[in-house]
Amino acid sequence: MDAHEKTRYSDSELQEFKELITEKIRSSREELASLSQSLSNPNMNGTDDTSGAYKTLEDGSATLEKESINQLAARQRKFIDNLENALVRIENKTYGICRETGKLIPKERLRAVPHATLSMEAKLKQS
Image (cartoon, rainbow, N blue to C red; front, side, top):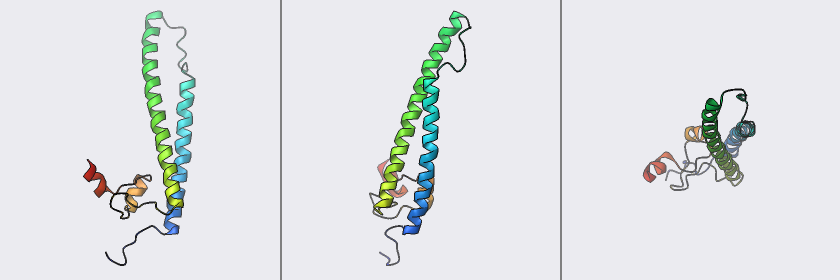
């Protein structure tokens, strides 16, 4: 291995990722809050005065919409958990190290997927 090859990101680089991740967590929490709000206000369309047959159709699509909002919310929660775990790795200075190869995950990949724990090389081997 080349002596100059880095085995971990520097503290200033980790700080940069920490800011990126903290910002992503903040915006993800806002998104989750708005998803939760749309789940608790199902009658925003105000369809109370429409005819019976149409109402049944509405209920069906509302249920479907509720399910997809629930799925989105669950996905958002998982994303936030992954980001929070990434912050822990930053604190431990293990952030950005591929858990398969032990090599540094390129910055471009981490900027795109800040909670990544695998390099593309290792990810492709898995599939």
